[in-house]
Figure 1: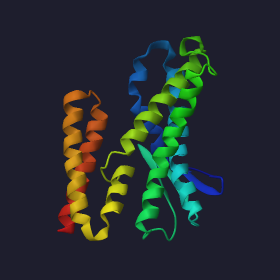
Figure 2: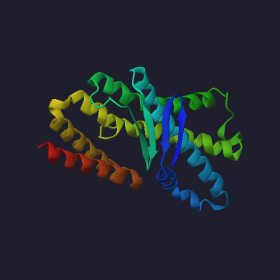
Figure 3: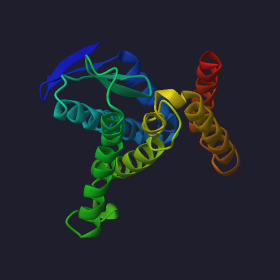
Length: 215
């Protein structure tokens, strides 16, 4: 367990975070002699990207006067703050949206620097920097867009529930389940990412369980 502070925010990194980062890029083990540098670049990008995403949520909490903390755990992380359990809906939307927006920013900045020629083209970069830049662009674009899909507990799902409000929880859950089923079908037909498919199935089933309790 690793604990430290950043910008006045307490941050905890659980051991399973590192293991899940390795599993997300398991194909690197088959990449030949350079697999160590490949995996090191990937784990570094995952750490920076997930932490930056959660800092987006945490900074939004701070803006509203809360004292947030961040936990990085298996396959992601979360930011929370004491006393923020019953946020006004509009604050909940802003805080949920802040993480993906920070992630998209971490994609757009290097992408624009690359496009404008401030950063040399990929094929001119040293191998280590090329790997870091490639993974940074891919991870922050894909993870940010995935987080905006309206399936709870993704940020898009949290936004959906906040927009529906507590009095229409069942309708919100039915909507997020429907989105989960459609997105799962899309991944099964058009994508070879079995990890994302499994992730969507698990989230959809959790929402189904929550709907059953709400009934």
